Image (cartoon, rainbow, N blue to C red; front, side, top):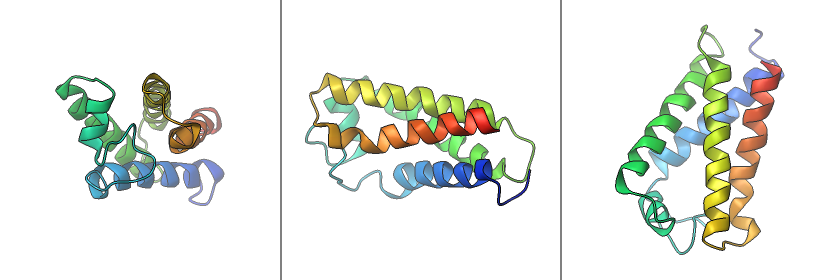
Amino acid sequence: MSWLSIPSVLQLVVGLGLLNVWLLRSTSPTSYRGGEARSLREEFEVYGLPGFAFYVVGGLKIVAGVVLIVGIWAPLPVQLAAGVVAALMVGALVMHVKVGDPAKKSVPAAIMLVLSLAIVFLH
């Protein structure tokens, strides 16, 4: 696969996006966090999820992000990683609905869902 192909650019965008949120901005407040949460950990609490869910979801997203990025150059299970991200984004959208968030807070998850599905189908 060429480095400048559409799937590889999508992989880079989704992978870097995941790593940014989970490794660099997990404690930063944003206007997209669920409920009134100011960090990712608080967001999971707002959703009523058990404490271990934060680590499971975070681990899956970090591993998927790395697979998507490295998979541009190495034969890794990119479609599987993108499928996992898509499933997690569906879960994120459900959680936003569960707590009654305005639609604006769901935009990042919706975009990541569309991009992840594009990777699955284009790869």
